[in-house]
Structures are given as structure tokens and as C-alpha cells.
Image (cartoon, rainbow, N blue to C red):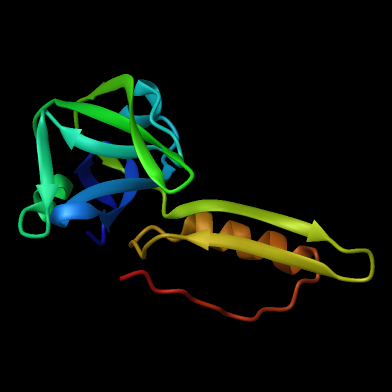
Length: 151
């Protein structure tokens, strides 16, 4: 939503189709101070099921609209095989404000500086974004915009 407030576990996950139309979710990133972070979910984790429910190509969108407590089974990638671990994580979605700035840094390459900004979505609160671009400007970083789209 444009106000940046969502009911969420606080993690960005991408669905992946595996054998027999089964869907698993790869964790791209976890927001600071979110229920997901507090429960120990981290980038690279693979969510196999929620409350014992295995997702497929017809029901996987339900994963994104969970409102009740979730018991999540975690897997790891071993070569080309996903292995279920003994690790389960319990997370309850909460209403929270998501900072759309995932990370930012200035990389000094000696003769040139590069500003890096990973930005998730647009909200009505732009103060943090103005601050980042101010830091880039103070460090004499010129701007080129590049975007990627995940489907």
C-alpha cells in the first residue's frame, strides 16, 4: 500500500516451482525488527510449507495473505536438491510499516564512487529516500537509474 503499512511477517519471498507442481518460497530478504527476523528467518532460507500446507501452482498466492500464526518448515539447497531440515519457525504476521529501502552503500573505487540503493516499493513517506540521495549528492555521485523486474 502507498502508506507502507502491511500485515506481514516482514520477509520478501519468491515462489519457485519444483517437481509435481509443488511451490516452495525462497527468502530474498528479511526486514529489520520484523517477526521474521525475530523468529530467525534469513535470506536464502527455503520455505517448504506453512502449518503443514504444501503450496502448488493454484494456491501459492495464499502464502502472501496469511493473517494467522504460521509454523514454517525450512529447507536448504544441497546442490540441486532441496532437503527438509529439522528447523521449523513460528511467526505471527503483524501490521507494520515496511521501510522500502532494503540497503544502501557508497562504494569507493579509487577514482570513482558508486552509490548503491536497493529499493522495494514506493510509499508516501520519502524522507529516508531524500536522505540517501542527499548522501549520494554529498559524495559527488552522479545518477543512473537501473531497474530489475521479478516475475
